[in-house]
Every structure is written in C-alpha cells, then in structure tokens.
Length: 111
Image (cartoon, rainbow, N blue to C red; front, top):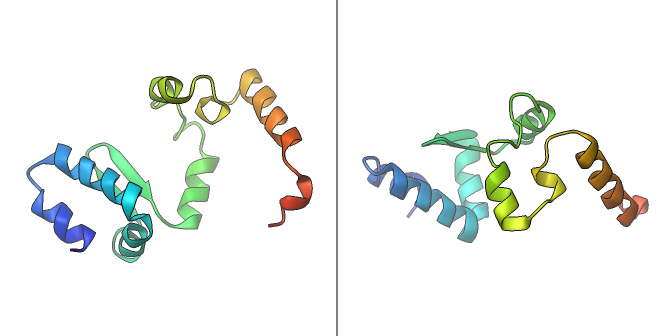
C-alpha cells in the first residue's frame, strides 16, 4: 500500500502517523522518498518535517539560526553521548569537526 494511503487512513491518530513515518523511514526509505518528492517535497506531520529535495536540504542546513540542533540535543546526547552532529556551532563543534576532517582522506572529497 502506498505511504499516502496508509497515512491518510490514520488521519485521526497523529501518534500512529508518526510511528508509520518512522517505520517507512527505517524499512522503505527509497519508496517513501520516491512518493514524497513529487507530491509533498516538504512533508509536515505532527511537529515533524521531512525535506526531500536537495535544494531544500541545502537551504535547511545553511540556516543554523532557524534549524539548529537544540531541539534534538537531549535526545542525541542520550543516544550518542557528546557527538559533533548534535552540537550547535561553537568552539567544541569546531574542535570536533577538525578532528573528523583530520581522520578523513581529502582525496575522497570529490566523490
């Protein structure tokens, strides 16, 4: 069954809709994104947004003040501990990203 059919069937159950979205993201991400891109490229659901098109993703990632990580900070810390992808820009973030850059091979960047 297509994602939109399933999500519509749960229209009166927002928590179940979020659970369904998470299940599709975990198990059928390609099918989900193939369905969302043309029909709803920025899909909003009960406080969750899924951004599906490259230009929109780049825009979100460039707008730290609007789309910071503070909303997810406590959840990310519980899941991963102190990890640079869960940090706002600042000295700790810069230090951690510098370490990550040292660990990566710059010849791989073009790929």
